[in-house]
Image 1 (spheres, rainbow, N blue to C red):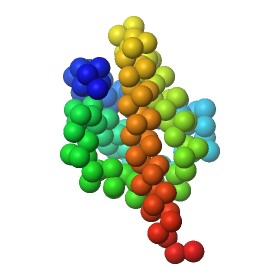
Image 2 (cartoon, one colour; image 1 turned 90 degrees about the horizontal axis):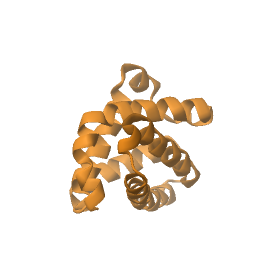
Image 3 (cartoon, rainbow, N blue to C red; image 1 turned 60 degrees about the vertical axis):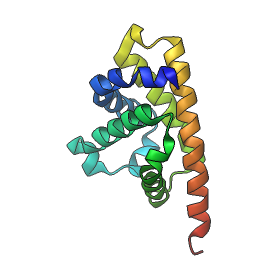
Image 4 (cartoon, rainbow, N blue to C red; image 1 turned 90 degrees about the vertical axis):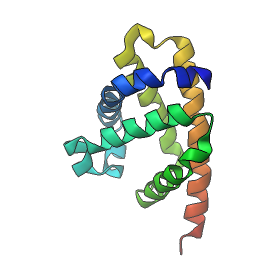
Length: 140
C-alpha cells in the first residue's frame, strides 16, 4: 500500500499517458476486446481520462477502499453490460503494467511494478466477485 500511495503523484502527472499507452497496446495485441469499450469515448480521449482518474483515485485510497465503493459498483455494472469476464482481467493487467513501464521507464522499478500488479489483482478480485453477483442476478 505504501508503494502505491507513494506513486500517486507520478500517476497524477503521467496517468493519462499510461492509460493511452495501455489501450494502444491492448487493442493492437488483443483486438477482440476492443468492442467491449465505448469507441466514441476512446476516440474523444474520454475513456483513457476516466481510467486514469480511476487509477489515481485507487492509488490515493488504496488504504481506505470504502471511499471507492460507489465507483467500484458502477465499474462492475458497466463490465456486466459490456460482457467482461474474469478471463479479460489478465489482458488488462499485462498491458497496464507494460504501459506503466513504457511511460515511466527506469522509474518503474521491479518493486513498483510488483506493487501495482498486486494492487491490480486485489481490485480485480473485488470487481470479479461483484460482477459474478450481478451476472447471477440477471434474468435468464
